[in-house]
Image 1: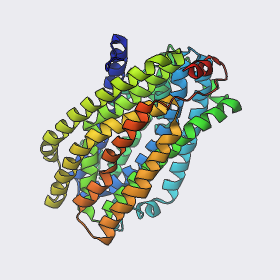
Image 2 (image 1 turned 180 degrees about the vertical axis):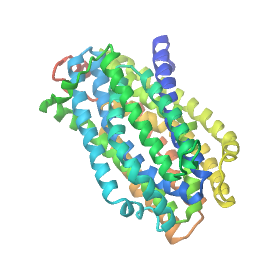
Image 3 (image 1 turned 135 degrees about the vertical axis):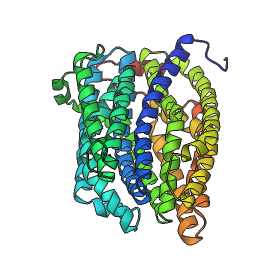
Length: 463
C-alpha cells in the first residue's frame, strides 16, 4: 500500500475544507483577539476579567461543538449516501440540544455571574470587570448556539463558504463597534468592558440573521424549513445519543478542564491570567489549520464511509497523519517567530509580557503534538464512529494526570507559572503515543443503523 493517496479528489476535498474552515476559524479567533487588544489597551484588570468571562464562553462553545460534531459525523455519512431525509431529522435533534445548552448557560451566568467568576480568581477588581462583561454577553449564547448548529449542518454536506462569510462580517462589525464603544469615539460614551460586550452581542445577532437568510433562500442541498426542526424521531435520537453523547461529554470535560487550567493560573495573579489569555488567543489564530484539519477529516471520512468506500479509509488515514505532522511543524515555526511582534500591540505590565513570551514558546513546541493527536483522534477516530475512546482518553490524561500534577506545581510546590503552564500542556505530546497506536490498528470504524438506509451497516460489516 502506498504511503500517500494518489487521488487528486482526496487532496482537493481535504485542503479546500481545511482552508475555508481555517479562514473561518482565524476570523473567529480574530474577534477574540480584537477584544483582547482593545481591552488590553484599556486596562489589565479589564483584560483579565474579559479573559475569565471568555472561559465561560469556551465551555459553551465546546458543548455546542460537541453537539454539532455528532451531527456532522452522522449527517456526513447520510450525505455520502444521498439520504437527505435523515440529514433533516438529525439536524432537528442537534438543534434542540444546542438551544437547550444555550438557554441553560444563559440562566446560570445571568443569575450567578459573581459566583461563577469567583471559581477562577479571588481578585475583586478582576471579578468586577468580568461581571460587567458577562451580564451583557450572556444574551448572545442562544444566538451563538443556533448559528453554530446551522453551520455544522451545512458543513456536513460540504457547504463551508457561508461560515467564512459569517465570521468575516462578525469580525468587521465587532472591531468597529469595539473601537466606538470601548473608548467612546464619534460621540459615544466610553463603556470599557461593557462596550466590548455590546459589540460582541450585536455581532452575534447579525450573524444569526445572515445564516437564517442563507438557509432559507440560498441553500441548494438540504432545503431546511422551519417545520423540519419540529420533527423528532425517537429511534434516530437513540442512535445519536449512542454516538454523540461521548462527544458532548468529552467536549464538556475538555472545556471544563480549560476553565480549571485558567483557574489554576488565575490564582497565581492577574499577570498570569493576562499572559494565558494572550498566549492562547494568539495560539488559536496561528493554529487554525490544526483545528480545521480535524473538521475537514470528519467530513471526509464520514462521507467516504457513507458512499461505501470503506476500503479507502486505511490509505486515507495514513496519508492524513503525514499531513497533520507537516501542518504542526509549520504552525510551530510560525508561532515562534511571530510572538514578539504580536506582543508589541498589547499595553500590559513587564511581568505579563515576559510570561506571555514564555507561554507562547511552550505552545510553539507542543503544537506539533496537538497538530497530530487532535485531528487523528477527534477527526479520524471519532468520524469512524469510535467516539467513546476519545472520551476515555481525554478523561484519563486531563483529569487523572495533567490537572492534578499542575495543581501540585501551583499550590503545593509553589513553582513558577511557566513550570505550571508546561505541565498543563504536557498532554499534547503524551497523547501522540496513544494516537499512533489507536489510528494505525484500524479498529475504530463503527456502524450505526440508519433509519432510512440499511446499506451502510452491510458495507461496514464487509470490511
